[in-house]
Amino acid sequence: DESSGYESESAGGERAGTAAAGGTRGRQRRARTAFTSEQVCRLEKTFQRQKYLGATERRKLAAALHLSEVQIKTWFQNRRMKLKRQI
Image (tube, rainbow, N blue to C red; front, side, top):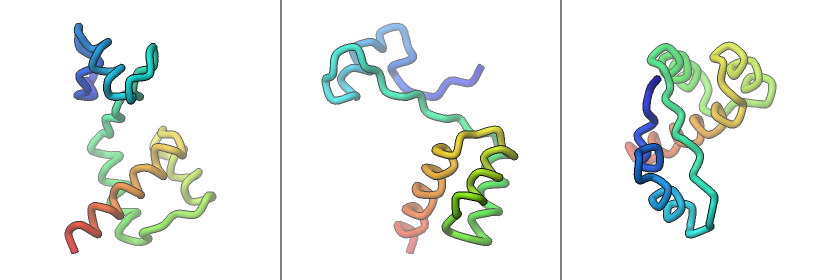
């Protein structure tokens, strides 16, 4: 089991998770995805070829990496923002 690093997973996490979700009672933040090094390597390699994925490419990559399409989409959005900050 890999920890996501969020405080909400610790023993006193109930309050931290609620505060992080904007104060909504009973709702916790979604756990952070811990990508494996193989997944990150494949994602980076794909990103080098194309910065934007269409629905078909995203679906294929998600199936190959055993991730959801939303996780792939979010990873690419975050990676493009990281590239933008570096430039």
